[in-house]
Image 1 (cartoon, helix red, strand yellow):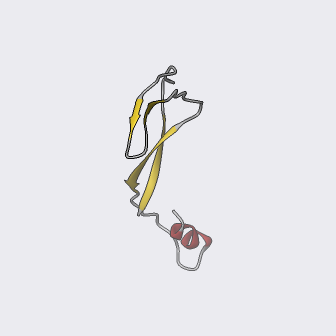
Image 2 (image 1 turned 45 degrees about the horizontal axis):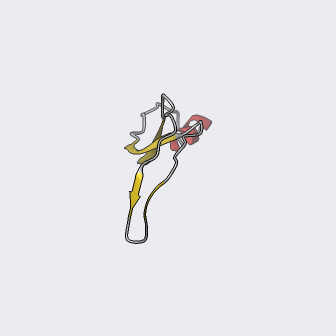
Image 3 (image 1 turned 90 degrees about the vertical axis):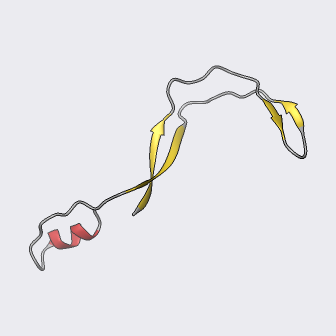
Length: 65
């Protein structure tokens, strides 16, 4: 199963001015990092096998883990 893992970006960076260039503009912009920012990384989630009795609430719970 594919999920996104979230990692907080630490430490926060100071204000910086990168040069930006594409087919429309060539300029510098002020960039500030406002808390809290996260890095989202695609990851795989492997289901954990859980023993459950037949016809029980535990069996339903294993479907959603």
